[in-house]
Amino acid sequence: MTWADRITGLLYRRRGWLALTLLALPLLWFAVIYLGSLLHLLANSFFRLDDFSGQIVYEFGFSNFVALFELANLDVAVRTVVMAILVALVSTLVAFPIAYYMARYARGTQKALLYVAIMLPLWSSYLVRLYAWKLLLAKEGAIAWVFAALGMEGILDAFLSLPSIGGNSLSFSPAGTFMVFVYMWLPFVILPIQASIERIPASCLEAAADLGATPGQVFRQVIIPLSVPGIAAGSIFAFSLTLGDYIIPQVIGNSTQYIGQVIYRQQGVAGNVPFAAAFSLVPIVIIAAYLWLAKRKGAFDAL
Image 1 (cartoon, one colour):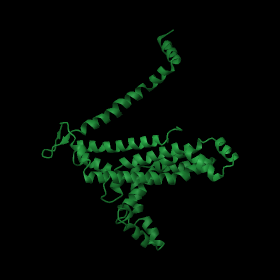
Image 2 (cartoon, one colour):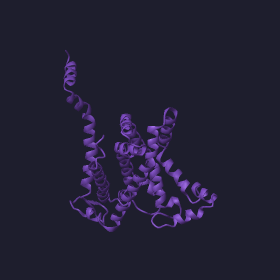
Image 3 (cartoon, helix red, strand yellow):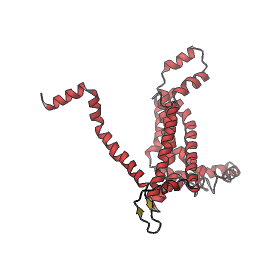
Image 4 (cartoon, helix red, strand yellow):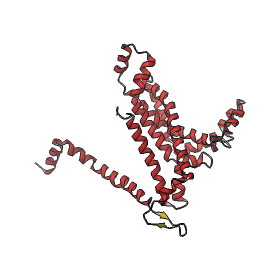
């Protein structure tokens, strides 16, 4: 018996060792590349930038974390979190009916076409879709033209005049930024919810009906609770992607700042890598808190 046969036999008898062997390289990559990068990011956040020379001073301190609690930086963090929550909520509300229809009613060719329709935007460039939306939302764009053709331009102007959400046009407003965020992340919300609903055993629905539950009761008390893992996964995608994105607010929107933009400008324009590193930890902490809250509410119990 060769040494290869002995190793194969050993791994066959000890399945734990087999799993460890298969996972060794991915775990090593995760530990070195991902966790190593996070630790390096954390280390940089304790340094500071010398205002006179523009050089990084490698002295341990908490000045960057103190700066995070300045009013302007808190305003950026709160604005970004509120936007991420709204995007996750609206994306889920829009995605659920689509996912429900795909899982419960669509069959054959119709289901395949729905999959293609949802996935098709992801086959094109992120920037192409983004600039296409910029043209649609522009003052002379298709959406403004439709409102004008219907004689409803006054409604659009009234909406754009609202503080905090309006602007010169939809392409230069927080409302436009919100719309593009929802569009961009919607496929990432639909598919987990659809998979979650599709995994609900038909026997559960039949048992509920046999016990006298109305279709509305089956939907509220059986389908929605059992689809919570998919809803949680989709909302986490939408929330986290919104939290860290800096390109959409840069192209669609006014001068309103979000976390991703602040990090990008501090690292790339100002050269303040320590402060950018400290601010980068804010989304990580927020996502960790979001996941902890979702787990505590039992969102992952059925996974």
